[in-house]
Image (cartoon, rainbow, N blue to C red; front, side, top):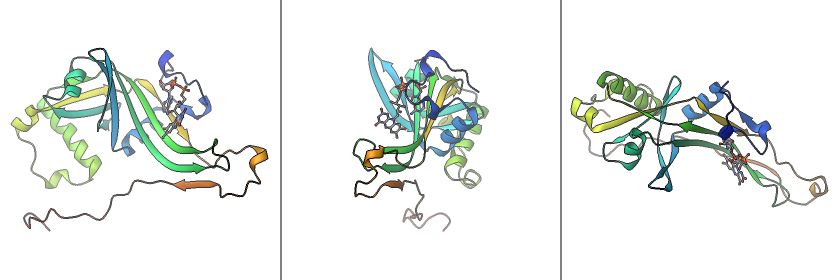
Length: 203
Ligand SMILES: Cc1cc2nc3c(=O)[nH]c(=O)nc-3n(C[C@H](O)[C@H](O)[C@H](O)COP(=O)(O)OP(=O)(O)OC[C@H]3O[C@@H](n4cnc5c(N)ncnc54)[C@H](O)[C@@H]3O)c2cc1C
C-alpha cells in the first residue's frame, strides 16, 4: 500500500478510496490520457496529456519546447489525475444523481530521462499500450527524434485511487417516485480503423 499522506487523505466518502498500487496501476493503464497540474508563475495550470506506466513510474513525453515538459524537467510540484467514467448514475431525485468512476490522483516531482536506450524502451511501451504489437511494425525513432522528445517519469509514490460503483442511492421517501432509476454504462471503445487514404503502406 502507498502511505497515506496529509495531501492524500480522503475527506469525503473515504470508503471509496484506496492506496492499493495495483488498483492505481490498473486505472493508469486503462486511461488513455491524464491531466497534469502545476503552478506556473504563481498561477495554477492543468494540461491534458498522454501518459503510460512502466513499473512504479508514470511516463510523459513532449516536444522540448512545451511548457509542461519544461516545468516537469525543472522539478515543478505536480498533481496528476486520470479518470475513467464507468456510468451515469440516475437516481429518483435530482440530488442523488452521480457517476460511477475509477480515478487516480498522484503527487510528486518528475525526473527527466535522457539515456537514449531508456527513452527508446519507454516509447516502445507507449506504442504497445495504445496498439499492442504495433511497435515492431513501424519505423523506429531516429536519434534526432529521440533527442527532440523530452521524456519524464513520475514515481507512483504518493497518491490515491477512488472508485464509485453500483446503483444510485436514493432516500427512502423517494423510492416510489415515478421515474426510471439505475445506471447507464459508459465505455470507451476503439472503433473500426479508418485507413489514411494515401494507398501506401500495408493494407
Ligand atoms: C468522474 C467523477 C465525477 C465526480 N463528481 C463529483 C461531484 O460532482 N462533486 C463532488 O463533490 N465530487 C465529485 N467527484 C469526487 C471528487 O473527485 C472528490 O473525491 C470529492 O470532491 C471529495 O473529495 P474530498 O473533499 O474527500 O477530498 P479532497 O480534499 O478534494 O482530496 C483529498 C485527497 O483525497 C484523494 N482523492 C480525492 N478524490 C479523489 C479521486 N476522485 N480519485 C483519487 N483520489 C482522490 C486525493 O489524494 C486528494 O488529494 C467525482 C469524481 C469523479 C472521478
